[in-house]
Length: 373
Ligand code: A3P
Image (cartoon, rainbow, N blue to C red; front, side, top):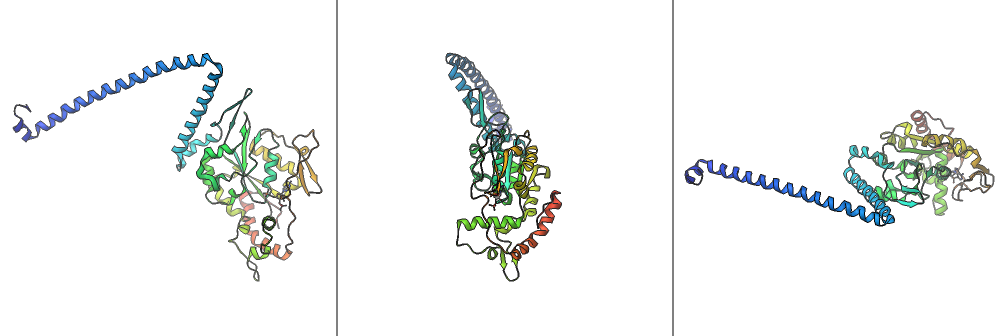
């Protein structure tokens, strides 16, 4: 009709719709043929490649193992990257990747019959600076089921943009059944970190070593003074106005000790039973009892006991041994357990007055009481 009476039909709009219908029919059938061809090609490729791989791997068993290992590693890497890309800045989907901390492998090496992998940490020692964090890390490393990097990774506060793969590569290899932990004390006080840790895994276990905030501030000052002998006296740093003893709350050396404030931020993302508080004073008096509770919290069998510790009178602190049948004791380095500068009792008590209401709030939040002044 369109060709015969084209002019009149087109005028009435019938021709245009007839042409459209014909073209649509043609393109549909072409699309169908194209899809069928593509599916056919994929099947052909698959049938050719599989026997080729099998043949190749039977020729050399070593190359078959290598092929399998590299495929597994590549597969995991791709899976991991996809998850990471898909979940970056997306909290809800990231929740589902909590298993990232437990399962994925990015590096596979074969040591005898054992397969070792690097894993993201399942527990973090998040603080506090000068609370006794190094001692806790070194004591936990006495456990055969716990591995941890020696240096502080500072991933969540400094290197976060490098991504989880970078972070995981910092971790030591774990054997089957071993757990990875790390310690970076600045995490506890840095804003935004609770959310980032939650995004890595909402199941992460958090360890905080707390110590009398006045003593913590003095210890912090001792470290600053050891590095910079020109530093101002302690009282001039912690008080904004020395005459009225107004505490300078802008100073990091002061702020770190307001534990309740920092803990509140973590409790927005984690429950209290995911956070274990180590009593920093008791850690020196009775490390074994603190370690007993810690091992239960982390979920490893009790291994570290009183037999691992001795009190070293010269150092004034506990020292430890890896093997209870040996007599070689290790103490922490000299920058742990430094002599403190003289700080008058007046300055100490003014600072203690400042911290008291925050300490009280901490006791209410945690149900844990500390013998702080
Ligand atoms: P001081 O050096 O002020 O005494 P961190 O490792 O978090 O920086 O904490 C250092 C603090 O750990 C030390 O502070 C010390 O009081 C405490 N500590 C606990 N156990 C220790 C140990 N076995 N050896 C040395 N210091 C220990």
